Length: 159
Image (cartoon, rainbow, N blue to C red; front, side):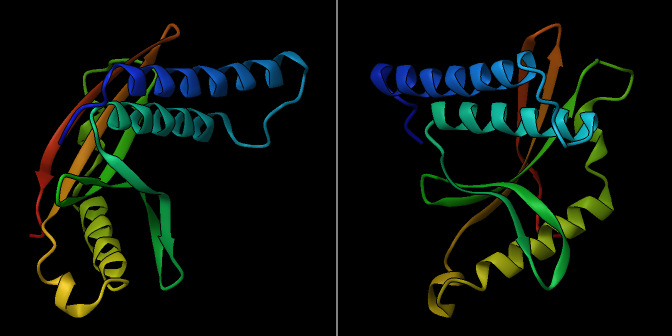
């Protein structure tokens, strides 16, 4: 995985700043979001993780991927070198006794595994068997306007 070069980082930073500015302007003009506050926090955390992954050289190919055949979604899917990564993002607005990544319990891991298997069905069978897969967890803490992200690569496996 090749991290973004200086110019790419500037472009990513500008995109992230621009989206943040649009959010600010929307709230300033009194246009309330139709999304519940806790969901809005989660979406902000996913976006922060997305931009950080891009800075690290991950090619993000899907965001909030769902299947019509099962419940749930995969927050982010991306290629890190030749490895397909399924990333679950957990966002918190405070650092409590329990870290954000601990919210990815066995039920959540099973759901992500099943969705990953469904996503892999979109590849030809011959290729599907040779694609290395990794399951990651990103803990995002948004506290006092500052964002801190911790990545746990290979947080869990197929079993």
